[in-house]
Length: 575
Image (cartoon, rainbow, N blue to C red; front, side, top):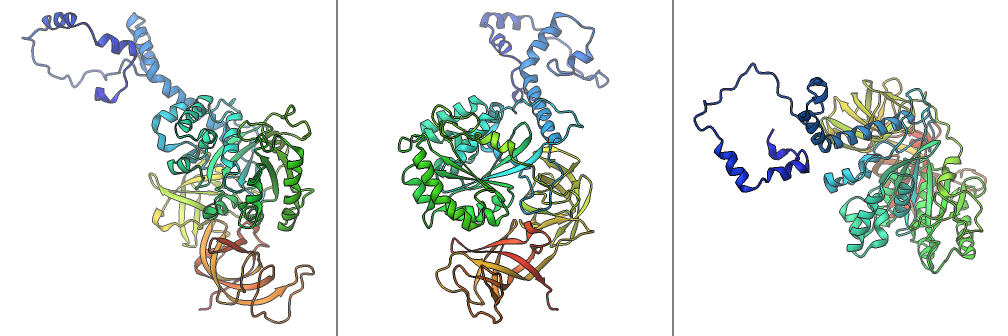
């Protein structure tokens, strides 16, 4: 190996290299200029480097000082290997803990798989990888029960503190080292952005850090005693709502972050603010339980005031009830401070004596288990794909289970593919259950042939595909009327496709559920109707009754969410 490609074996050795000049000259004087030319001996024993990890086993008898010296030298080189091994061991334990067999149902799932990829700042080179060693987790025996996987999406208005809370949780649960955060803090200070450093644990690319705005859905994971959580950090800015919908479609549980700071809560909650739109989209995406974190309680304008907390609560509850959450069962309010970490892991009794409930992380741990059916049909909507020694796809397994070497079918192409490698949380595994976020390396298909929104399923139970379907739609926000021929963008599971309303079939009475006898000529805001829709291309979908997670959708136009709906019937294409 070229000596330039290897690190110095030890710093002492390097120092020895720079010997005084007279010593070097005397060494040259001893050279034999008339020595025979060197002829390599091809039958010689294999050369084993002195710093190689094999040395002790291959040379057990040579107990001389040389061996000891070489072993001392070896330490700096071997250390990273040990580190790497430690990381693998740790990740294997998470993989073993995995997800329980789960339920094929709307919220079913757990955004695990891609977590470590997105979470580790790739742009920052080797230095960072060394600085963020895997957290220390006690290895779990193979037969130990797997921990339940739960996906938590953080939603809310821009600058409410979603990424900061995510970063703080990762620090409190030991997923990010203190020195890494100190490094982020120094870098943030240099850019006069010292309060942003926690969010940098999740906002890993340069654009997000410079502007302080999340663009892609950030991924990270943490563990509690009973569960394995994936954080999906959704962007708050209204330009990136399609990304947020993708994140929410993988979540089981939503955390709505609102800012208690004077003026900020009002901005986020008024018309045009993302607090309203995000909570509605989360409900549409199938999130059943909502935790509302009233953040920035440590702000001087709030100072842990109970009055301000109650004011935010009073304004939010009627709206969340209207969206479809039950305030008694589905919603839980709690105050916190993302920047200081108060009330996230430990109760903030000295500052916030009026709040008697559990802090955020213990509350997550105490939530009841999700019931998911692992014996359902295999359905894995694809979120993303790329090339890496073959074709790699990412997605959340909504129902059923997948194993390594299995033959599955990519819809709507109907291409048979084989699962070469299966990774859950970037740890190789032989099989995976519902709710896990997976990374699959496939054989038999090219990366160019796959689009986000395609579905992996088994040959025995193929997923339905088509272009025309009947759906029940609720018009949420639209200034004028909607007539047949109206076009919008359809977001269904991970698929985004242009769609046109081809016919309005009937109006549905909101209170009684009765359908009108005559066909309406148009629909307007706040009305519910059944309509026939036709997409520009063939998509994969299921009826809401058969498979809720793949049968609910949103319609968006001009950067606004116009309607939400559910698929009632698939219409066969006319020949």
